[in-house]
Image 1 (cartoon, helix red, strand yellow):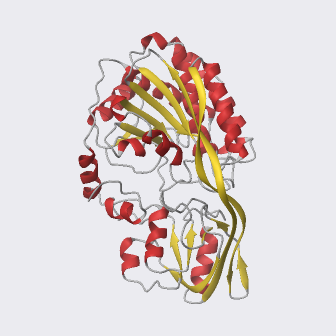
Image 2 (cartoon, rainbow, N blue to C red):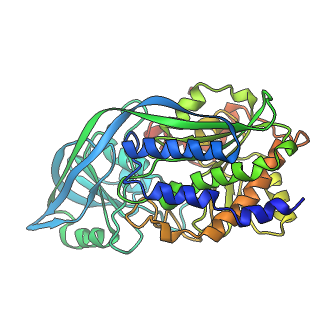
Image 3 (spheres, rainbow, N blue to C red):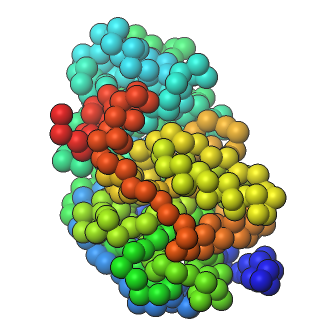
Length: 436
């Protein structure tokens, strides 16, 4: 019964896919690289033994990076554009708002200014504030431009998209600067005029989701998901090549255990996650939510050894993860809070049980993710194999007919978001789907 574990520990299926993905020129949503990444993922799932491996296309707002800049005094500082920034220039007084907490914006005169905020939050603050939330606080206050300063040292300007589902191109030009450039700007130019500029090609484009299936042909389904796209500035090894590799490795492992599955398992690797969860939104809009027993979404795995599970207030998901951890005498971390970012969310927001699986790195934020440093050398094949063992067993556990997971009412999810003080920020960025 344990032979499959040895097979996973000697398998190259997932790692080979990861190497192929990072060797593509880039996997930005809507590009040729993303298409090729989806195709090789489809082929890898078919080779693993899944059936009906296929691509599903959908339209997206295309955005291709051009040049960008920030001029301050007589200097020109290093920066990169944030995807889906408008192709525009802006001038204004630089206003350094530090962490960019909601109260920082409330007490500031923002109108006409170029607002700079950090990518982290202080230890005392009770929740993470997403980049887009800070951006739209600045927009709401009348800012002329937006500067996103990395908190991770190493001369690494951060990327990450702006825009909303209704207006995918943002309102004001937005750039990312490194921690070091941000410190220089704050020290020398806070309160002085600066100019930011972004050039980009903005046009219609196409992305695609990868689907494949395994197990009995039941109406009920367990979704095993990740995303294949990545930001264009790096290899996207941890975000989210490793997540795609995990999906392939799970499929490879379950192929030898298919007769143990009581429920159909569908592998879905999404496109266009990095520009607003467009691929998973497309899937969720066309799926029967009642038929989905649970979702296991890997986004941010293999960055560290210990797996971390956001379980979104579903006690059965906590229990299943703990059973697997106890069975292998292996530590995991479960977090019952809601995590409204990544490809589980278009389903979980309506009460579908879902995990967001990542690595516990002991650090705040994405680490090397969304920077030039998200490269293959930052992830370890041993961690990939070890986590694939745990997640394969978790999927088998969820697919067992004796495992039950109750859906939640959408109103319960909305109330929990209010209780966790996440609702206000979601409303600012246009991600609040519930009727008031």
